[in-house]
Length: 237
Length: 225
Image 1: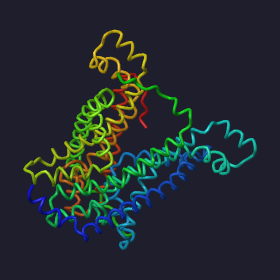
Image 2: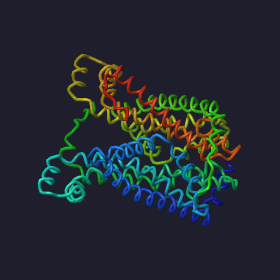
Image 3: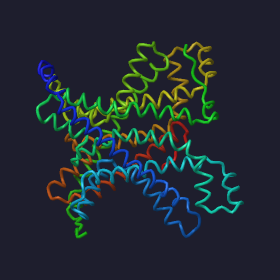
Image 4: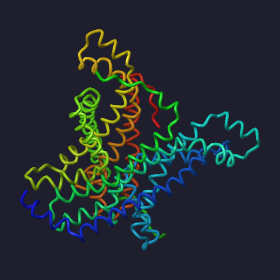
């Protein structure tokens, strides 16, 4: 215990703190880039998955299989697969790129279901009306469905991105200089594990908590009155 | 890309990987069971407890759900030996995962508690049931049905995302075995492809088992995928 107390002033010195601040920035940048690209690709995936017609059956199957398979593989296995695959193709890809690709692959699978749920929440009469006005499938999606679907899509998508900040801790394993990696490094330098990992946990908390509050606020703002009435609460005795 | 895939070495080591898969399944089940107990206790406290207790539970849930499971486990694994508590790798992983799952399950079960209708609670109060009896006979059967899909989904998350963290603190579960074996002969891509396939099969078995359990015990029509 005395050892920890004695280390505190040395641990919270300037260089260490800038190191952690940079690492936190990298964590955030990685998550944000990966999730944004993943979100865009998920839209494409859902669009392909809903292609009508017999000839597109294999396409639909591929999309469904992709989502189902990636939801069932641990993130760390995806990271290792991407790392060794990318390095076999182009040996000089940066680790940050590899991390972003892994996050992106994972985010596609998870957000595709969120987007599909949002799109399916739009009443079918809207789509039929659009078809009767001779809008193409792409036009129907962009002009009719998405404007109505995004209040349903946005809150869980933001919640997913926020929760993914925590999952990116696993990326430390391939050597991206993010929070967990720096934590292990500081621990190896001889700082107490309780102190180091307590601080790192606090850093993640400070990144994730305000964003999750923002997500909840958005959810309340965007919720339809119909959704609010849904459940009656237990009265507290 | 000039990389020759050689799956031969992997097939030779399938028994080791299967051992890892068995450990993964065990760890997942124990962590989920322990987490459910914590979740049930805390969700009951959050619904009925006095405010200091509710506040403590809130703090626990908010802190655990906003920090990575990996850091929590590192905290137990690297931090606790300094104050004289030494647990084995498996114990660290299991305790960390149970605490982590407990926080998320508190949220899920709490949502279930809120979905029980007031009239049913009132009816049970009229019959003179105690709080424990209410939870046991009225609320639990109810929420078992309404939150079953969320629970089944979360079990898969614990089984896959949760236990794989153990590989980083030296637990020989499926991912850990893959790392151990592939450091011997550098066939990373092959090992991890096979392991990914094994995870998919494992979770499908778990999903089917859960769907059957749900149908048998709670009459839920669960979807497998």
